[in-house]
Length: 455
Image 1 (cartoon, rainbow, N blue to C red):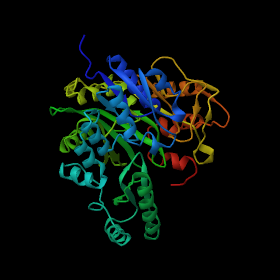
Image 2 (image 1 turned 60 degrees about the horizontal axis):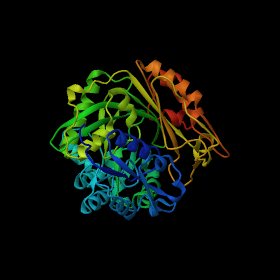
Image 3 (image 1 turned 90 degrees about the horizontal axis):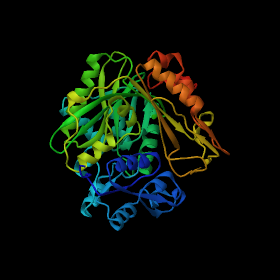
Image 4 (image 1 turned 45 degrees about the vertical axis):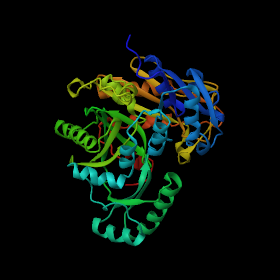
């Protein structure tokens, strides 16, 4: 039997992604260490991992966002690598550096690469130099409102104000007229400072009624870079993804090929290693423009796994250990159609207000080609301190129409009940059952318009 790439991996995260990582580690023969905050003491990953270490109270900045906790836990338990998952410390180059300084392998891009791609304003220029199409926008950050007004006059309206250090769909404000710019600029700067600790923002032309399409890339330490096809993430509310699918409906083969080539070129341009995602907009005319590069595993990575049969966490671990990719571009042959629905503890009728509480009933669906990734089981409590994601439902089928039917069937089986707990399941069924979605004609504006937000 081949020796595992690492002996023991500490998972610096929580919830479904922590359990997802732990499962692949077990299959590879790698021992795992879970870390947990006080309210997560009885979580699924704590029960599953080989060891578990308490790292602080509920507040993320005193537990999952505090570097000393996971570092000290890793050293105490004898781990030789740290997997950050997504969110929290996953895109923090300082955390990757501290890991290296303590003899721990960070399972992700090198710190200098992460720092370089973390500034989304600078990445625009790097991608432009690499030959990728980039939307008209500011040359780097816009430090003052007066400068924003000058640049906006050159770009034209509508436009977006974006946090340079943003991510996860946060720190984005749409501006449709000159009168709106001062307010949106001020609010986006304030949010960027509060959420990302960096108030820098940049401006970019706004493209409405477009598809949000992202391409999964893998790069290793010996220079191999491949793409694993695209995912469509156009069903969103407030830039937060609700449903993802692959392949993207409505793309012709020329555009699909173009997206893959751009993604590989962009990853090569920054020396990217690990699993990453190149995000693009595709407008009604099929014109492709680069949006951003996410230097981590994505929430929706199972969609690509379902189509390709490639375990992305396994590839991340291999790459971090210095091993070459296990696949070449010609080996990547996506087949069929896959859909992921994010089941959140939120009330869509109350502005998507989080609805934490006790899960008195939590029965997940099964059946052919039906996967559920979750960090919860019946009897658990959904804490109010973290992201409201309860589970990810992923289905695969030979055709898109069959995948939609399978996703709806599985959602109909999903039973979640508890005092105060409301979920997005009814909305998800409404979205994937809508004729516009069935026809593959939805854009990033669809959910907003469907819920009465207007064009």
